[in-house]
Image 1 (cartoon, helix red, strand yellow):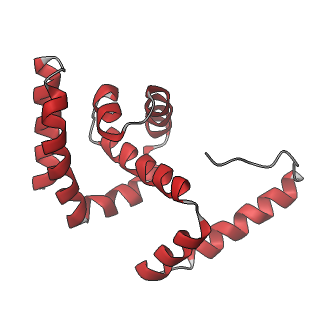
Image 2 (tube, rainbow, N blue to C red):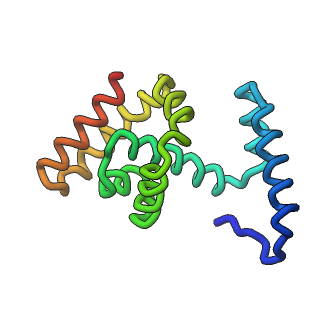
Image 3 (cartoon, helix red, strand yellow):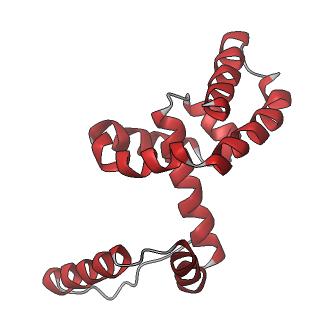
Length: 143
């Protein structure tokens, strides 16, 4: 789990640091340089956390229920609810990334794998939920 230092920065200084970070990241354009940067910049746990959050938002945008998201990503129900609320308040902030994800072929393959993984877990879901989850996974992997 990442932690923020207890030594607080002034709001102006913090804003400038965050702005510099946003600017520098926005200037990276090649997939390899972005990957190399984040491989060195983030810990393995931070990368996993961010990747799970990204797919979590994607699943929320596809109207997966919280139990299904929890089953697929192994994130806490609190995390699912928190990001569902964030997504519902400002979906437009997530849309550019979601559009890019929807075009990614390897993501479709990932959902085919998730579909195979979720089938045994879905046995414990109510029939209507199971049917709906599998339908959504198939729709994503075929689109």
